[in-house]
Length: 266
Image: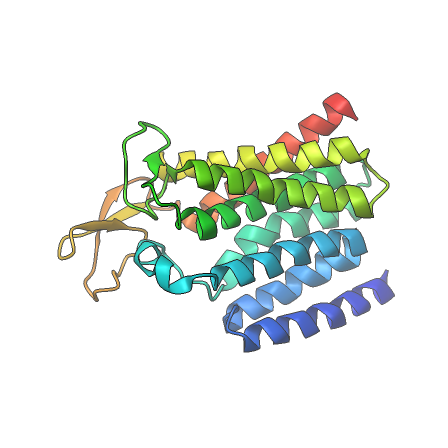
């Protein structure tokens, strides 16, 4: 196992250095990515590592896709595409914990749950990066009223379709690379787990996530300090529940959903 962790560390280090150089990771994010990559790749195995890499690489590439067109929406987000420790752990922390549990308490349930977690963070990130390019404004998931692009809790047909596709890609990749799950089960676990987790993310964003308001720009945002340079004031939601924690909770639900599908169909 020590040898596996060393190989995983060296491989993760090479990937982290590359994406830090490309501007996709901050210093704290690089440290977090190194920890997450080493644990998932070293303890879960190479298939787990491929699923993590698929999420991270695709998400990093999409964050730069038509970047200029997404600037207006990005003003609402708490953080940019340069991921820090909080973002990395929100997306990969639960997967790391599952990898540890798969060694400490071996069970067939951990791999489908890991698929659901990776499917959720992939689905949500893809929906955010591509859904903001939809021509029609999104609608709030709780009321259906139109909202500005980038508003927490806003959903659109394009974003939902992309979310489903992101989860399906994770499930399909798991099916092709691993013999642990039947292909149909892995595909369904990824697609359904990712979609459910992504929708839960939107629901939390529309209801209990902390959202602020800039009185100068008269816009809501996830930022305590708006891009205009003025401090914002709390508008709604729980003060402790930021976007990183919402992502973490949503990935947990997505993981449970994929595990439930495996238990029903496996």
